Amino acid sequence: MTAISVQQGNNCVVGRFRAMASPCEVLLEGQHFALCQQLTQLAAAEVERIEQKYSRYRSNSVLSLLNHNTGQWQAVDTETAALLQFANTCYTLSDGLFDISSGILRRAWRFDGSDHIASQQQLDALLPFIGWHKVTLEADQLFLPTGMELDLGGIAKEYAVDKVLQLLSQQFPVADLPGFVVNFGGDMACNRPRDDGSLWHIGIENPTLADQAISAVGLSQGALATSGDSRRFLLKNGVRYSHILNPKTGWPVTDAPRSVTVAAPNCLLAGMLATTALLQGADAGAFLQAQGLTYWLT
Image (cartoon, rainbow, N blue to C red):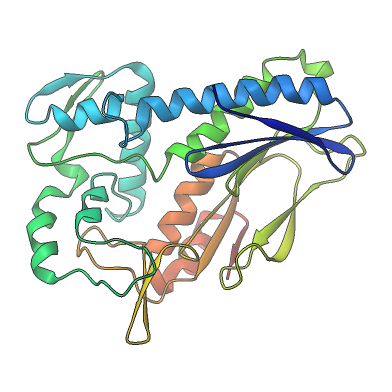
């Protein structure tokens, strides 16, 4: 069972645990310590379920089994099929730049702050196994070509935020629903404004100085998600290589903002748009402006 802690905050109670390689929080309006503990335990259990099911690091996960049994039709459950359909939407909207089959590029790139740069020979060996358009998804059946693999790391945390928000909301009659925020590593969603009608104030991390906020935004309902390269990059000969990779070339995207934050009705949508914007490079702002949503670039 995931270890949790609960502490009194400023006019709220905060439940904390760690999952998906991120600090996770549930912030509950008021001073309801026992209730926050209960909700945090529910949140931790749901995140553990999602991580067990979709982590590529777990050999018995649904995702690992799909990647292991390539070259044949495989049955997928309803939840997995819905996630893969969303991945298809990501691929289409981004003109092929948001591609869940591109995780295989980690074999050539390790963004650990070192100066080890992938070679073109390494990338050329991997590129034939990248391309969501090569995958066939029909209702509850998936065909993943031999040598390919899927990685849901780009959407799993945002999906977990939305699922936990939904799960916790279902614990109360609508009239008794307290205000709360689900925050997983900076990707977050809230159910409504605070009791006094004010907004939840959320800090956006400075991509240059980690753990420092450069601005605060107000959130009354919906979600925020941030994508950036402040923690994962390579540096060689004065050139900084982002971990945001173009799946068509295998190389890091250039001239992109260091960080993109997007506000949207749900966290999955916010996260997809934030990452897709980074993949646009210098055109990130124009892409986001066309979506008609609120965003912040740094």
